[in-house]
Length: 258
Image 1: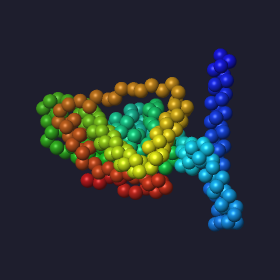
Image 2: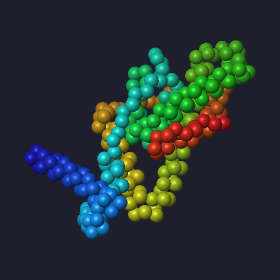
Image 3: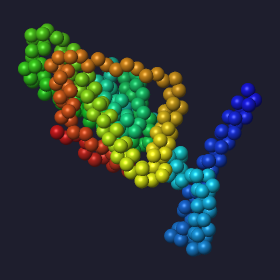
């Protein structure tokens, strides 16, 4: 027990020391001629910063990651029943680089502020797109056939359509995430620390997510059903145009297109 306590204290001390070193790096980087320092002071600060980077193998980019502030935003997805867009949230949270937790009547989104804004915007837009696509499907002969000939309940038809659409949207968003990571990997290969920083950012987000929800367990997905409504839902998801809605600065841009 004593050994475990000593190791824990040592790890905590190393973590605190690391953050102090990163803060020093940040302070040295701001000591420039443009900020009012003399040339000799700026040169001394640059040498001190280089010395710290070489000694501890740290960069200012790591500082940005390790000192990142996270938010937890609640979002309502319905009243008594959660909206079927919930089925698209696995791919969406990977694409937006956030973590999403199912709550009563809605969800909680954990991540950096501009990325959480991005997720909220995309979820809202996908909900609208799903509702619009289902309204259009209700005007088709396939819908009439399922209701009047196959005697399916309207709620079941809606469920099959919406869950299939959400499931397909999730897959599309996850594929876009993988493509984005592949492009990032190509760029990272040009930098010795690029790949490590991506992993560091992912680990930092996951650690914050687990800190806030230490006992969370994964839950199963909804059934997508089969038949005309399910096929139409998947086809509708393929028609939705997807582009990132919030840039790194948090400004909203276009999202849905056809």
